[in-house]
Image (spheres, rainbow, N blue to C red):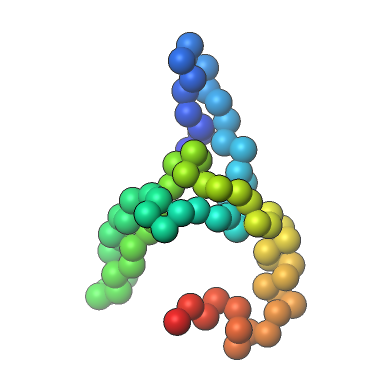
Length: 79
């Protein structure tokens, strides 16, 4: 996350979404950026502008609380 964006008069408009929040966005939103990790592991990150986010589903704090109480077999499985 950066500091925000600049408006037409050069003032910084801060980001309204907190780091770690669970958000909704469109199928074709953002840019896929390759990230080369340790060893042969390769991952891709999706970089979004704030304008591409439809809405916040839950805050980072709520997600941490729910994922800590959830069944580990179900959480984080995307097939």
